[in-house]
Amino acid sequence: MKAIINNQNCFIDWAHFTDEDGSQPKGTQCRISDTTPSHTVLAVGQTILSKKDQFDKKIGRKLSLKRALEAGSVSKQERKVIWNNYLNNDK
Image (cartoon, rainbow, N blue to C red; front, top):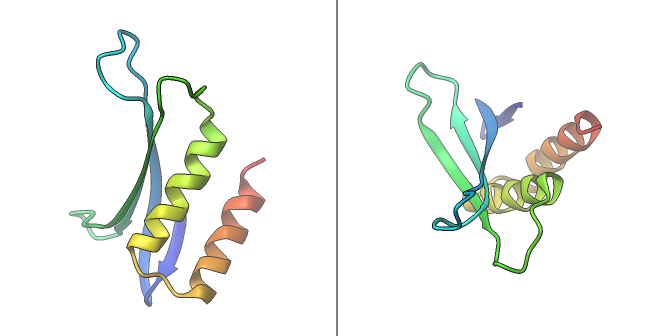
């Protein structure tokens, strides 16, 4: 997903990690990176499931995005635009 954060073009993407043998935690990671060829990571938000949790892609994406936006010190107006874009495209 593309976004503009602090007057900079950024890309927001997610990775879901599940481990079938149970040796590693399960969860979702949201990365906010710039659009330069090096894709410098500007902020990361992550969720980790407890052994009792059921993996849910939508919940993991929302919570990790929230945490990434908090970690990236994104303004309230920019957060509003990003959330509207995410919610309108997540159908």
